[in-house]
Amino acid sequence: MIRVSHLNKSYNRPDMILKDVSFKVEKGEFVYLSGPSGAGKTTLFRLLFADIKPEGGQIVIDGLDLVRAGSDRLAQLRRQMGIVFQDYKLIPNYTVFDNVALALEVSGAPRQQIQKKVWQVLKVVGIERQIDRLPVQLSGGEQQRVAIARALVNDPKLILADEPTGNLDYEIAEEIMRILHYINSQGTTIVMVTHNRSLLQRFKRKVFYLDHGALQAYVWPD
Image (cartoon, rainbow, N blue to C red; front, side, top):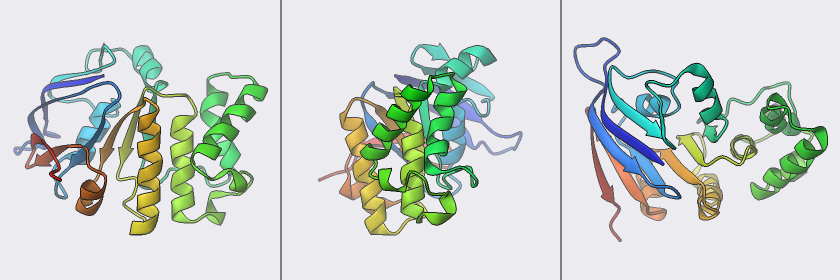
């Protein structure tokens, strides 16, 4: 699903943010990207959906080389991805329904299909009763559920999640983790950025650990 080879990123700084980073994520895996603050996690996250370009190396997702691909191919790939951000990035004057429906509307899906699909994904994340509310009327955990529903609505092959529990207390964070692991159990590949060691230990999966721009992989011990 994902193959990253000899990736370098510096933002024209003398010290590399990422240096010679290589790893693979197989289809259907759930992996964590972890490390201390400033280690390059968010930079790598942005590289994985081609928000920024590296200075060197290769990123191949589902057979597409992100470094060489044109804008049309990248847009096509992004439609097969779901992206979840720490700060939710919901449109404040849109209801829960409208925030989730937007991706389907942009792709030109018929209204009946949109209504059915939005209801389905809101039920998956347990937020269907708030369908007509605005983001300001929701708790942080509820807003993150909406963000996950929005990422799910296009039936993505891959979900990239950047610190999706970072603004939540531990109990709500566990609920979000259970939702993500359920989604993964249905076959969706997930790459999740987190620095939360308690969650890494509670929900064990392969960890790619970044430190000073270098990466190593390990599985959290039992």
